[in-house]
Length: 61
Image: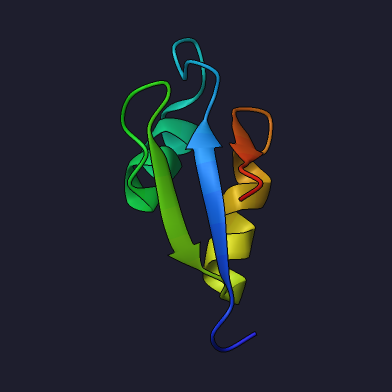
């Protein structure tokens, strides 16, 4: 898990979600719908992605 990465994209709007979910998206660096990030796979990032799984998709490269 040390050098692996995951490419995630925000595909649904966080409007109407709880503040904690919106803060998690901001922590991941996902601001606007359609924005994407390449993140290192760590237990912390995986936990954050689990919280916002209904709003993001993994991008296949």
